[in-house]
Image (cartoon, rainbow, N blue to C red; front, side, top):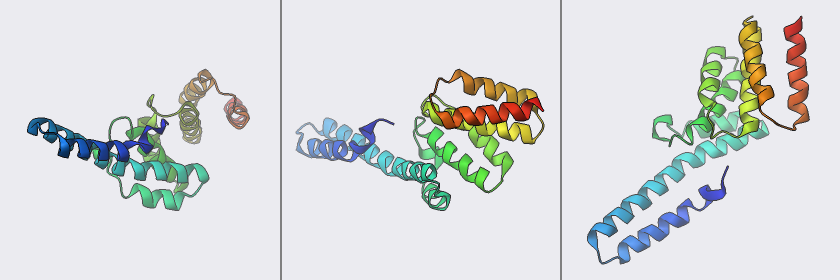
Length: 167
């Protein structure tokens, strides 16, 4: 995740200051609108980002509380996969298979980091195995293998899932 999200409040304040100090009224309105947009998007995404961090640490209760403060429809398209990823991890934890599967599929966007994409695909493969949809599970495993990662835990999980599929 780029570190730009940390700079948004400061950029917003600079745009507000520039909007207030600009003699051109139209430019001032544009700068103020842009700063308001940046500030609101920062507030909206900050909760998703905190929920994402809590999910990574295994604090699913805190992540769920943070996610309640966000609205998927108000998030920028770049931020939506993070929301869906966190939602899917919480649903898996609660054993809500249908919700988890849908959220995992929606989270597979290029803006999600490769490792998290691999984790989402692993969960989709596991859910497919549980539903005895073996060709679908093999498809997800093939997609995981196509993502080049040097994560030993993921490689071990791939081996375990392949063993389950071969039985």
